[in-house]
Length: 230
Image (cartoon, rainbow, N blue to C red; front, side):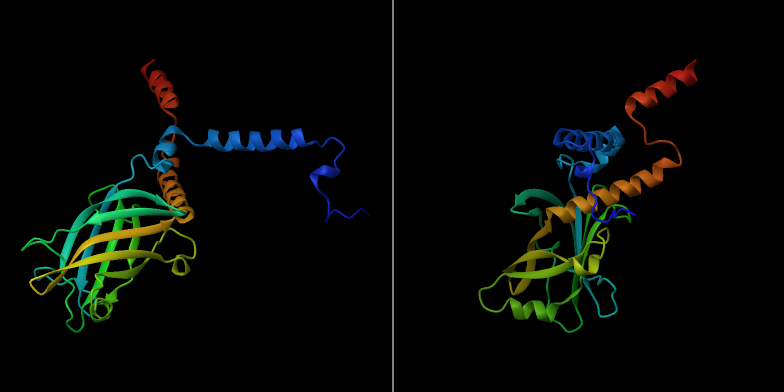
C-alpha cells in the first residue's frame, strides 16, 4: 500500500505552480464573494465607520457604582490610528467642577470601565472590552511623585481565550484643588485582535439575519422586491 502521509499536491502529475496560484486565487474570490454588501459594511475592514463610547465608574467593594459626584462619566472615543501592530482608541474625559471622574484614595473603591462600538448604549453584540476592576489605592501608589499616568488591563469578550489576551488601557490624570481627576483614556489593541473582534461581530450579525433571509446584496433585495410587485 502507498504511504499518503507525506503526499503533497506537487506529487500530482498535473500539478504546476500556476495551477496552485490559480487555486489560491479562486479560493480568495470565493471568500470575497461570500461577503454581501451588508456584511462588508459590518466588517468595515478600513475602519471608516469606527466610533463609539466609553463609560468609567468608581465602584464600591461589592461592585456597585457609587452615586456621588465624580464617580461616573460617559464619553465618546475616537480611532486615533495605528502604531506599529496596534490600533489606538482615545477618549477625552471632562474635568469641570461638576462632571468629572475622581480617583479617590479611600478604602474599598475600585476603578472600572467599558468600551463599546457604535450605539449610544452598550449591548452584548457591540461590547469591545471591559476593564479589570483596579483598587484606587493601588492607583494612587502609582501616581506618587510627578507621575500622572496609570494602566488598567481589559478583557475583550469576543476573543477566543480572552482571559489570556488582555489588552492595556492607559489613563492620564490631572490634579485640581487636591482632587485627582482622570482626563484621558487610551486603549491599545493588537491589529490581529481587533480583526478577530470584528469577525466575531460579523458572525453574530449573520446569525441574526440568516434565518430571516436578510443577509443579501442590495441587487438581490431589489430583485425580490420586483418579484413581489409583479
